[in-house]
Length: 363
Image 1 (tube, helix red, strand yellow):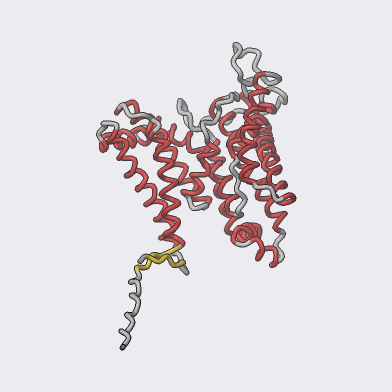
Image 2 (tube, rainbow, N blue to C red):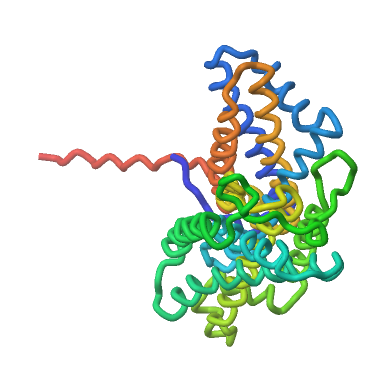
């Protein structure tokens, strides 16, 4: 018989190795559908690795894809650490991009050292304000934030589509539903010529470092962790739980909004309804794969980005559907959830006790 017993102490090495093993297990499981599709498994994984790391262009595409995933992963990690289940990073990303376009497409004329911080602030404020709504509904009315944040994603996307078809539609866009382009002064510059990786990556890495310092070296970080561990105990210890939730919601939404600013100002240059292929939802997988660690989010985002970028290359080289990337991401999440069980608990094999035989009654 197998018995699960809580671990008293979990070593940091074990906590780091488990997500790595989960990622390797996900790749191993992905070999099954690749083989079923009739492709050479070894060749497919080699093509995937070359597509993600085989050239400066491939690495640039990987880092460009990882940039919004780092920010949405941080948004999920911060909120989940306090047990505030923010499933609305996708909508917060879009309102951040919308605010950046509204400010940076000609409404204000200023040099880059003013415009870039301005659109960043606008996007973060928009994302944080959007997340504030379900946070207050949770703290004041007890509403389930999973439902409210998820449904707000659809409301925001419809609102963005309305704005792109109406007041913010580009008159020079030949009828396509897109915003006016962001001005050159508000554009995040490219880090290398002829490559798409931009300074949004630096912003994302600095954000991860700041979040790590806050979570591990500040009183507020302790309050977040305490609230996430036990709300009743935190409130009994004098921690302002409601204020902690509100601040966490603002920061989480702001980070997701910053992802929208990064995409629209650093990569695309204008806003469309298909700006994000699901960065907000994938950020949840990134955060879980990282074990809600801010620095681990960077590594997890690079892994997920490598899967997506490499799957595109594998699809062209091996005639395998690039939807295999979605499958690997889903398998990664499942493997992480299973591995999390082994982080928190240890298995012990116990021999079941046999019932004692009753002595025969004498007649």
